[in-house]
Image (cartoon, rainbow, N blue to C red; front, side, top):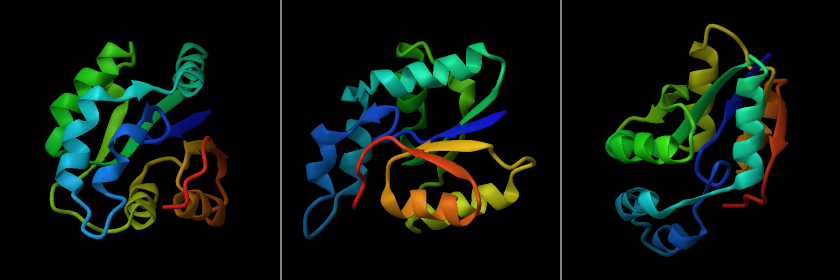
Length: 142
């Protein structure tokens, strides 16, 4: 089995930094830079670790900018998640919507995921439109 996990809002709790982007002029740079203080969403992190322990292929595909890749890898390591599982991050200065970005990654992938864990409604809808089971771990109407 092949599972894909989103990061922000799925593995990492980002509520403390949403104020940077839930406003008239979103500040994505500050939103991403504040990732170092994210707390883990424990049940979803446990699901990821269970899939890894079962020998499944697991990857993390994040719409988070790769400008904070080092911080992201450190955060994953602090959660005892293998940083090598992070296979896709948004390139710096790529502002396309998450659903379009992840659809590109899906079509470029060597294998279709069997299931995905994500939170954002429009991304969840994209996975389902592509015929992939998606576990929506939180409301994500943003």
